[in-house]
Image (cartoon, rainbow, N blue to C red; front, side, top):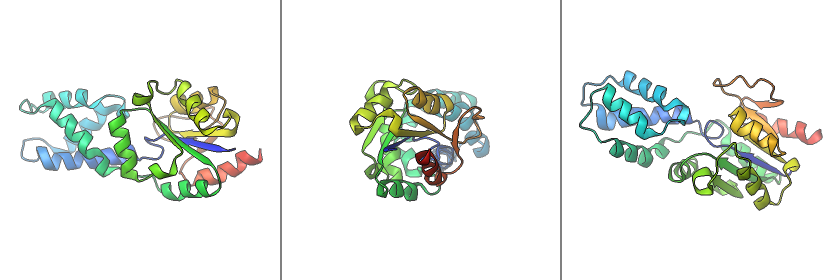
Length: 220
């Protein structure tokens, strides 16, 4: 194995924790003086966000309607989200240790993430991990998103690595694991309660588990 590539959200970035922190902060800054229950506000945001698969203009439109906040502008709230989410970017435990260790061991590292260029870039900067990677691809600027395998093959060509010599680590069984396997890579699933991971060969619970798993994959 010569290269290890990663997903971002719920793989390196604890998005759920980051989002909860952001929502709490946004409520305290903007909504605290209105007759809106904080716990319910945060709960509805998480519910309608659907793990990031619903864009925030839709989420805020629902919040405005549900809580009768018609004096707020949806776009202003989206801008606030884009401006402030990265301040709450929370890594999973061991993130910097794992990336620095893999780098020292000679692996080329890559990051492939779906999402908006501005938001994902600011999240990466918030985690302070951009310097570890030899390539970072964000779907909006690349023009294709996972599970389209073209985004994987482009990264591998840039790194000069054959798919058989590369690993991809992500939390989504289809967009990350299945797609990378279709590309010819070894897919590793970072476990999450959102999926059962049935039929996936390689799995990790925490990021540091990857270091031992790589030894096993390499020996095979």
